[in-house]
Image 1: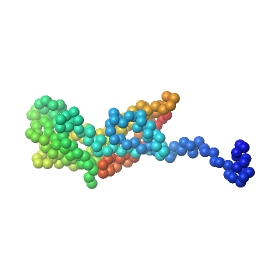
Image 2: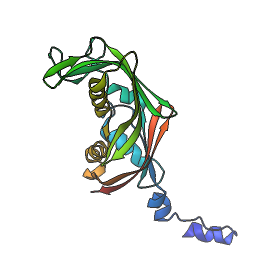
Image 3: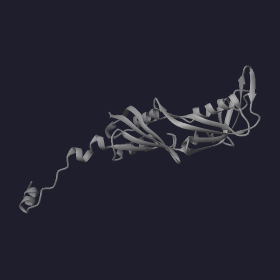
Image 4: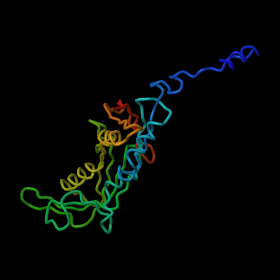
Length: 230
């Protein structure tokens, strides 16, 4: 009070007292940006989620970016010598198996382009039909978000060299089934695994995507969410 009277006596305005809303920021101005570069085992859930909470942006809104390199990991098995990922069955099966090797993902004008070499065998009408060698396949897909899951729907598929028919479609469907992320589940686990001082916890109550955009090297999602601090 003494300093305040001295400032007024000297013709100076008293220093402004920050309001609680100025210090914390209105909820409508807070946002979080989450970069999903790797599966949860690579990025510690608590650190990733707390970093999102500390971003001085708008509450209830977030940007999630998923690099194409992350999606490629879903189609690659690092334990296999050539990185092949089995899409059905397992090595040594006589039928109903298939794998993809040397996959690549890129953004093209039509959507997300997925390339790779596939080989497999399925049983049709009691007869096992197999591809005699690895065939290069190209598929163009568009991102689809439903029930908290990001997946990709095929709009165009081509098999270079020869037609694989039903077997090609079978392998393609298995490929796309692997290129999916349950974002609601993963973010919910991040929230429940993050803890603040005094045992404060977090819970994801709602999660929805407003927009999905394909960038040159990643997929970007603008999302809304409700977070409860417990």
